[in-house]
Length: 220
Image (tube, rainbow, N blue to C red; front, side, top):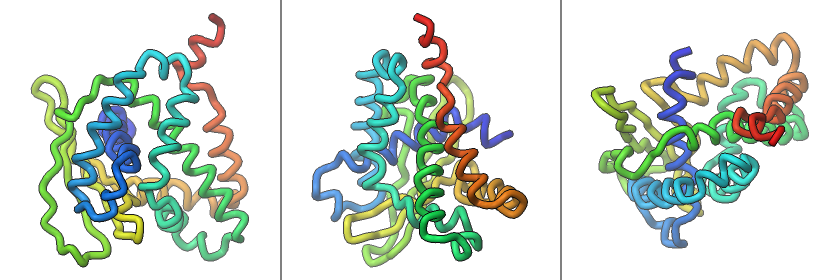
Protein backbone atom coordinates (compact mmCIF):
# COMPACT_ATOMS: atom_id res chain seq x y z
CA UNK A 1 0.00 0.00 0.00
CA UNK A 2 2.80 2.45 0.87
CA UNK A 3 4.56 1.79 -2.41
CA UNK A 4 1.33 2.45 -4.27
CA UNK A 5 0.85 5.78 -2.48
CA UNK A 6 4.29 7.17 -3.21
CA UNK A 7 4.35 5.83 -6.76
CA UNK A 8 2.18 8.72 -7.95
CA UNK A 9 5.04 11.16 -7.42
CA UNK A 10 8.15 9.07 -7.21
CA UNK A 11 7.63 6.44 -9.89
CA UNK A 12 6.28 9.08 -12.24
CA UNK A 13 9.44 11.09 -11.76
CA UNK A 14 11.48 7.91 -12.10
CA UNK A 15 9.82 7.26 -15.46
CA UNK A 16 10.73 10.79 -16.49
CA UNK A 17 14.38 10.17 -15.81
CA UNK A 18 14.54 6.71 -17.29
CA UNK A 19 12.50 7.32 -20.40
CA UNK A 20 14.43 10.45 -21.23
CA UNK A 21 17.78 8.71 -21.27
CA UNK A 22 17.41 7.47 -24.83
CA UNK A 23 16.84 10.99 -26.12
CA UNK A 24 20.44 12.02 -25.56
CA UNK A 25 23.08 12.29 -28.23
CA UNK A 26 25.30 9.31 -29.15
CA UNK A 27 27.85 10.65 -26.66
CA UNK A 28 25.58 9.27 -23.95
CA UNK A 29 27.56 6.05 -24.27
CA UNK A 30 30.50 7.84 -22.62
CA UNK A 31 28.56 9.79 -20.00
CA UNK A 32 28.73 8.91 -16.33
CA UNK A 33 25.47 7.52 -14.92
CA UNK A 34 24.53 10.67 -13.01
CA UNK A 35 25.25 12.82 -16.05
CA UNK A 36 22.89 10.72 -18.13
CA UNK A 37 20.11 11.15 -15.57
CA UNK A 38 20.70 14.88 -15.13
CA UNK A 39 20.99 15.69 -18.81
CA UNK A 40 18.01 13.74 -19.99
CA UNK A 41 15.43 14.13 -17.22
CA UNK A 42 14.90 17.73 -18.29
CA UNK A 43 14.20 16.65 -21.87
CA UNK A 44 11.48 14.19 -20.98
CA UNK A 45 9.86 16.46 -18.43
CA UNK A 46 9.71 19.25 -20.99
CA UNK A 47 8.24 16.90 -23.60
CA UNK A 48 5.47 15.75 -21.26
CA UNK A 49 4.68 19.27 -20.08
CA UNK A 50 4.52 20.60 -23.65
CA UNK A 51 2.10 17.88 -24.75
CA UNK A 52 0.16 17.45 -21.53
CA UNK A 53 -3.34 18.23 -22.85
CA UNK A 54 -2.92 16.10 -25.96
CA UNK A 55 -1.52 13.21 -23.93
CA UNK A 56 -4.46 13.40 -21.54
CA UNK A 57 -6.87 13.03 -24.44
CA UNK A 58 -4.83 10.36 -26.18
CA UNK A 59 -3.10 8.13 -23.60
CA UNK A 60 -1.80 5.84 -26.32
CA UNK A 61 0.40 8.69 -27.51
CA UNK A 62 1.98 8.77 -24.08
CA UNK A 63 2.54 5.01 -24.13
CA UNK A 64 4.12 5.30 -27.58
CA UNK A 65 6.31 8.19 -26.45
CA UNK A 66 7.65 6.27 -23.49
CA UNK A 67 8.02 3.08 -25.50
CA UNK A 68 10.02 4.87 -28.14
CA UNK A 69 12.53 6.50 -25.82
CA UNK A 70 12.56 4.26 -22.74
CA UNK A 71 13.38 0.84 -24.08
CA UNK A 72 16.86 1.61 -25.49
CA UNK A 73 18.04 2.87 -22.09
CA UNK A 74 16.40 0.26 -19.89
CA UNK A 75 17.78 -3.26 -19.55
CA UNK A 76 14.39 -4.93 -19.68
CA UNK A 77 15.78 -8.41 -20.21
CA UNK A 78 17.94 -8.23 -17.09
CA UNK A 79 15.10 -6.72 -15.06
CA UNK A 80 12.73 -9.44 -16.24
CA UNK A 81 15.15 -12.18 -15.21
CA UNK A 82 15.44 -10.66 -11.75
CA UNK A 83 11.67 -10.32 -11.38
CA UNK A 84 11.02 -13.93 -12.37
CA UNK A 85 13.86 -15.22 -10.20
CA UNK A 86 13.94 -19.03 -10.15
CA UNK A 87 10.99 -19.19 -12.54
CA UNK A 88 13.16 -17.75 -15.30
CA UNK A 89 15.11 -21.01 -15.42
CA UNK A 90 12.00 -23.18 -15.74
CA UNK A 91 10.20 -20.95 -18.24
CA UNK A 92 10.42 -21.74 -21.93
CA UNK A 93 11.99 -19.18 -24.30
CA UNK A 94 8.48 -18.31 -25.53
CA UNK A 95 7.20 -17.79 -21.99
CA UNK A 96 10.17 -15.60 -21.15
CA UNK A 97 9.52 -13.37 -24.14
CA UNK A 98 5.78 -13.23 -23.56
CA UNK A 99 6.27 -12.36 -19.90
CA UNK A 100 8.83 -9.68 -20.75
CA UNK A 101 6.45 -8.07 -23.25
CA UNK A 102 3.50 -8.27 -20.87
CA UNK A 103 5.49 -6.96 -17.91
CA UNK A 104 6.84 -3.98 -19.85
CA UNK A 105 3.38 -3.05 -21.13
CA UNK A 106 1.96 -3.43 -17.64
CA UNK A 107 4.60 -1.09 -16.17
CA UNK A 108 4.07 1.54 -18.84
CA UNK A 109 0.27 1.46 -18.57
CA UNK A 110 0.36 1.43 -14.76
CA UNK A 111 2.66 4.41 -14.27
CA UNK A 112 2.76 6.48 -17.44
CA UNK A 113 -0.45 8.34 -16.70
CA UNK A 114 0.93 9.43 -13.33
CA UNK A 115 3.22 11.74 -15.30
CA UNK A 116 0.15 13.74 -16.25
CA UNK A 117 -1.15 14.12 -12.70
CA UNK A 118 1.63 16.41 -11.53
CA UNK A 119 3.53 19.34 -12.97
CA UNK A 120 7.07 18.03 -12.63
CA UNK A 121 10.09 19.99 -13.81
CA UNK A 122 13.82 19.46 -13.55
CA UNK A 123 13.67 21.43 -10.28
CA UNK A 124 11.73 18.55 -8.71
CA UNK A 125 14.63 16.15 -9.16
CA UNK A 126 17.97 16.41 -7.38
CA UNK A 127 20.58 13.92 -8.58
CA UNK A 128 23.55 13.28 -6.32
CA UNK A 129 27.03 13.29 -7.89
CA UNK A 130 28.22 9.85 -8.87
CA UNK A 131 31.47 8.80 -7.20
CA UNK A 132 31.88 5.38 -8.71
CA UNK A 133 34.78 3.97 -10.68
CA UNK A 134 34.80 4.39 -14.46
CA UNK A 135 35.44 0.65 -14.77
CA UNK A 136 32.49 -0.39 -12.62
CA UNK A 137 30.05 -2.74 -14.31
CA UNK A 138 27.12 -1.84 -12.08
CA UNK A 139 26.35 1.17 -9.96
CA UNK A 140 23.64 3.17 -8.20
CA UNK A 141 22.53 6.70 -9.01
CA UNK A 142 20.83 8.36 -6.07
CA UNK A 143 18.30 11.14 -6.38
CA UNK A 144 15.51 12.88 -4.53
CA UNK A 145 12.09 13.92 -5.79
CA UNK A 146 11.14 17.20 -4.17
CA UNK A 147 7.51 17.62 -3.18
CA UNK A 148 5.31 20.64 -2.60
CA UNK A 149 5.08 22.45 0.71
CA UNK A 150 6.76 20.93 3.71
CA UNK A 151 6.47 17.37 2.46
CA UNK A 152 9.65 15.36 2.80
CA UNK A 153 11.47 14.56 -0.46
CA UNK A 154 11.22 11.02 -1.77
CA UNK A 155 14.44 9.06 -2.19
CA UNK A 156 14.63 7.45 -5.65
CA UNK A 157 17.69 5.37 -6.56
CA UNK A 158 18.48 3.88 -9.95
CA UNK A 159 20.39 0.62 -10.25
CA UNK A 160 22.33 0.76 -13.50
CA UNK A 161 24.50 -1.55 -15.53
CA UNK A 162 27.20 -0.58 -18.02
CA UNK A 163 26.69 -2.00 -21.50
CA UNK A 164 28.32 -1.48 -24.89
CA UNK A 165 25.57 1.08 -25.54
CA UNK A 166 26.22 3.01 -22.34
CA UNK A 167 24.64 2.89 -18.92
CA UNK A 168 21.20 1.31 -18.64
CA UNK A 169 18.83 1.15 -15.69
CA UNK A 170 17.38 -2.14 -14.53
CA UNK A 171 15.83 -1.31 -11.15
CA UNK A 172 14.33 1.64 -9.30
CA UNK A 173 14.34 1.75 -5.50
CA UNK A 174 11.87 4.15 -3.89
CA UNK A 175 12.22 4.88 -0.20
CA UNK A 176 14.17 1.64 0.18
CA UNK A 177 11.67 -0.48 -1.77
CA UNK A 178 12.98 -2.06 -4.97
CA UNK A 179 10.43 -2.38 -7.74
CA UNK A 180 12.18 -5.54 -8.94
CA UNK A 181 11.89 -7.21 -5.55
CA UNK A 182 8.38 -5.81 -5.04
CA UNK A 183 7.12 -7.47 -8.21
CA UNK A 184 9.16 -10.61 -7.62
CA UNK A 185 7.44 -11.02 -4.26
CA UNK A 186 4.05 -10.37 -5.84
CA UNK A 187 4.45 -12.60 -8.87
CA UNK A 188 6.23 -15.55 -7.23
CA UNK A 189 3.22 -16.92 -5.30
CA UNK A 190 0.96 -16.29 -8.28
CA UNK A 191 3.23 -18.29 -10.59
CA UNK A 192 3.48 -21.06 -8.02
CA UNK A 193 -0.31 -21.31 -7.70
CA UNK A 194 -1.50 -20.63 -11.24
CA UNK A 195 1.53 -20.83 -13.51
CA UNK A 196 3.36 -18.25 -15.56
CA UNK A 197 0.87 -18.36 -18.45
CA UNK A 198 -1.95 -17.22 -16.15
CA UNK A 199 0.22 -14.36 -14.90
CA UNK A 200 0.99 -13.28 -18.46
CA UNK A 201 -2.72 -13.27 -19.29
CA UNK A 202 -3.53 -11.19 -16.21
CA UNK A 203 -0.85 -8.60 -16.95
CA UNK A 204 -2.06 -8.27 -20.52
CA UNK A 205 -5.65 -7.91 -19.36
CA UNK A 206 -4.68 -5.22 -16.84
CA UNK A 207 -2.83 -3.33 -19.54
CA UNK A 208 -5.88 -3.36 -21.80
CA UNK A 209 -8.02 -1.54 -19.25
CA UNK A 210 -8.68 2.07 -20.20
CA UNK A 211 -6.98 4.60 -17.91
CA UNK A 212 -9.27 7.03 -16.08
CA UNK A 213 -8.63 9.89 -18.52
CA UNK A 214 -9.39 7.68 -21.50
CA UNK A 215 -12.50 6.20 -19.95
CA UNK A 216 -13.79 9.67 -19.05
CA UNK A 217 -13.40 10.91 -22.61
CA UNK A 218 -14.77 7.78 -24.25
CA UNK A 219 -18.32 9.13 -24.34
CA UNK A 220 -17.47 12.59 -25.67
